[in-house]
Image: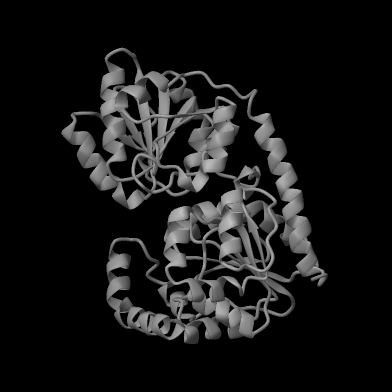
Length: 413
């Protein structure tokens, strides 16, 4: 099976130039750094101990930022490497003032390219985040005797069912993980089935407050302008979900004066399609990038720039989180919940079932299925009193996580 997988990755490499050109034209890939995906590195390693973190995209990268800053101040570590697969995650990392942390795009998971990558960077420890399971890289890490941590591990039943179809192959890959730290009980159960040798449940990293995220505030002028209106947010929206929210806005507007709906799409390259939908419904819109100072007659405010969600969560009373009306598994509700917002979501929340269970028990979140349910669930007052439990839990999880990683850095394992 591993041989077949390698043949598949070779085919990917052969067709990748055409695919990359398409992605660059669509502004989904970096036109100057795409060679990093072929293990042609654009930064230098330097001497000393290097630890490597890998996360797929924005959510995974943001969840490890407090950990990165902790090790920025650790004199035992000379370099921190972060890899990811998306342009948006690369843009987010530019917002942080790192001293010894650098970013590269993750290479195609071919045996030759993974070996080339590891020979160049020579990490002392590899930390993969959430669902990032790469057979060739895991094989290369084991061969080079580099410890591999699967941090904040997440496996849904859907993902597990896909892996278990190739049981022997999957168990061989997962057995190469030195230790896994699952974010929930369900994942722990699946990891055992997949023969991970050591598993330690310490909780979900996304409970940890990211106080280093500097783009937390919108401008004072814009904030004062929004105070004149009743606002709610539709965040991390996918295809069809904007239409759902736009129609809800139209109905709400009949009974609610001075209403503005803020849409933060999951992928900003879709903004043109969203604008087309808005125009078809005869609604007035403003783009965040236009830096408009007056919101008079505005229906929809579109956040069309990277990494701005937290800014708007701070002024929100109600947030609908996308990827939940369609089968995408939902998005992380903890950030807006920390600021006292009521969280609304659809039925598809497999990625955050445990988190939503807690938020539901605190009456912070609510499931909706129809525009009518959404309309009647939106409120315009924030409540921060119930969010302290989230912050306290985050502190505990952070301390436990650092304690576990320190064991590897101090060569205790």
